[in-house]
Length: 217
Image (cartoon, rainbow, N blue to C red; front, side, top):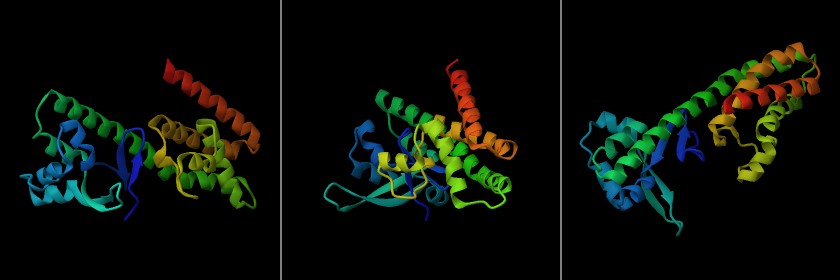
């Protein structure tokens, strides 16, 4: 099973291109105990098919390092559960979470695009060199990371406390992943047309600055 990754911008989890929230995120906003939320999920009057698709029983470790139950819910699962909760505060929370799920969907779409296009990115690097070296690939993607993030992948992992070699893209913001997606796509053409690394870097940095000004406008 793929790793479940918490996105810091939305407070939602991502795995295999799907967004989830935890039942542990529900109690505070709906003024309920987590045990009550677990009970509510188990007692939902939904079909078994819907339950299997939208509620995944899981576990976490509490502050005492003891294993405790939780449920991971898709957007549909959360919406079905939250339909039963009433009140002005509950309504605001439901609206906020549905909006976050929608924004997370846009993030996942861009995340998947960078993965789909990465083979074309690596093919362009291989085509540009008679004898491609392994560091050509890391140099090229880290150039884009430095332009967008102000640091390479290694520095980002150290800053966020991530494991050595862990992919950093799932931990980025939507704006960051979209910028990387765009620069990666532009660089595919530049790698073949412009052999000089520093020249490509300058052009990509200038393009990124124009992108930022466009977003601000």
